[in-house]
Length: 462
Ligand code: ADP
Image (cartoon, rainbow, N blue to C red):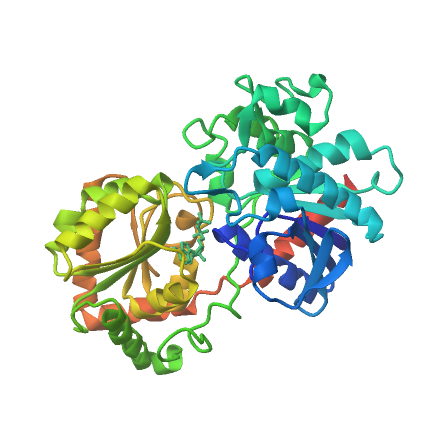
């Protein structure tokens, strides 16, 4: 099958979150299964600056290769993409994001024809790419080159929909008739993700539980009614982990490589983490790691409420995060107050993330909602036990056999479970059995890729 992926971020070129991990890894797994894939993404400034092996295709398109022979195409535009951020800067989202991603989606569709890639499937990711479904169905489907293409839209997080003022709608190039309840209109504003959900042939999200949750008022972010109407074409496929990037046995960022066969070497990484984080080097103190966007979704409200109590428990918290100013400030104040307990790094730092996954004992992920979550899957592979709230992909992947799960989303619920985890940590036999179970879990992309292929086949038959 010929598959064209369209996404706004892709590892190793540009990343703000798990979306990039998925769009970087899924194509590799699909290629391994014998399919022909291309990926199209914006040619951001960071890509130009990164001195990667990139060649020019045309005046505004460059390309690089990932996997064996997957071409990633970068759509350049000085006005739209030659900026430091992907979606915004310290003042918030870029005000012209609608124009930027409308341009990107149309240019991506044009590119397919220019390079004569007659895709069977257009696989779109999130609101930034979802417009391509609407363009395909409304402006391109009458052209013979495009009429056979089927569209799959993956929803990585319903909390981000690309919503803009009604006045911006004409910039999309559609007639006003598409600005209605069965199109882009959303409480009298333009909703780009909604347009994608309406026009895609199939929709999926990144875990089975989240696929159900987004059909409820509680987690549907206003789109639950539409998703219920489209439930016949809606499914959930769990993300995998790219174990060529996330493997403690080969990880070049960590102090000492280890695997199940020489698990005792994990301890060197804990010592190293405590050292670089300026925390007392003591193997008996449990280290709780957190690598997260600092957003409400990630459970930071109950975590922040519990910080004082937590620091009385003789634990060490190693927190790496970037995001909301509000949480940066709360965490900064706590780190100043408890320097022996908290190490805080307010930035995006991939090498440090690897060190935290490897050197912590417990990985905290108390997300209020979590479409799939990669942190808990990565930490399992590093023998770092996830402690999670029972929601979405966390509920689908973590149980008492490989981690700790709380089901009451409150500060008390979280603290009670951390207390329990610390007690288990002190019982070395029980702890090692949990670590063994965790490291034996397999969330490789192969299983997920097979499910995507089934979905593409179904879409193709439609
Ligand atoms: P989301 O996509 O909602 O941010 P996921 O758990 O799906 O959450 O994926 C997050 C990914 O981003 C993981 O690979 C995680 O290690 C990484 N990550 C998150 N915050 C940081 C950070 N501050 N520095 C480095 N990596 C980070």
